[in-house]
Length: 393
Image (spheres, rainbow, N blue to C red):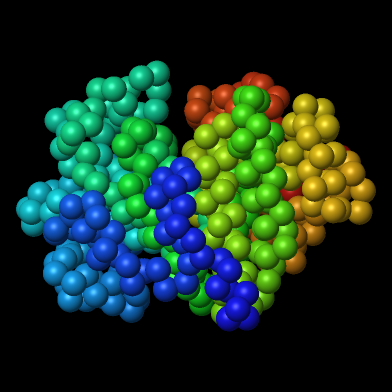
């Protein structure tokens, strides 16, 4: 195993500087020095802040002459107040850079705090619409180092953050090109011991990113190639990572598949994310789990538009037959094997707010990439099917 794991190691500049491999977290202080950060603020969630990896990273930085602060008041779906509090903490303690350390919530929050550390306009002024990002003072964005601890969101290579607007009860995508972290430390050892249910949900999130990017309407062959290989890695390694939490080879491949998904989805996403975003904002549900449950229902809704692509995907994944049904059955079987529920009702979501969620899904930026343009009524039907487990072929 040791010899195999050594192969999953490298320094890449794609799409940003990425230091990948086991034990790379020991180079955190070097990353700070490379970016000229002397007093970083480490942003993570409250649960992770109690784990040894956070204390050890802060202590290691201090020993290397990089005193590091900690901010962990982050909800599972971070909101505007979390970002405001983080920015206040950043200024009050004289920080000069951000280490976004954790899963998607911490990474998104850290990037948003870095953006807002030098802005005069409110957070929502930079929602990903038209050219809103041009409103920002790019010189006021703090340098960012990202350290992912799950293999799911890929937020470490993203230029945006998903933040809940508490007033309007919706998630908004905050975007700026300089929100792309300058250095990513992707150390798969940080995911060792992640519970099987979180490994499953985050792994399915990575699959949703690769799959929706592959199916999205835009022309982007580079993204398609990355997405295909990302899905192959997930097929080979997700179930193993769930069953063998200490398997560093599986963890390495899943961490790379996650990064690949977020690189690929610059091409676009689709109805999975268009629905998952309002569902997450309203029900405070895990984003990856939502995508995992929604996945086959969205595929069925898009079947006519993606049939040829599913044939190609089935061949690449070496499924039993080269057609849509083979891909659909593979996903349904995988979900069952790793413990993903078949319907949204299983996680406490009912029909009471279908119309509201469908309306938000229609307006979500992810909807633009869906291979089949959907109406609000169609989103409502899709959501009803997912709530009730109605997988109609």
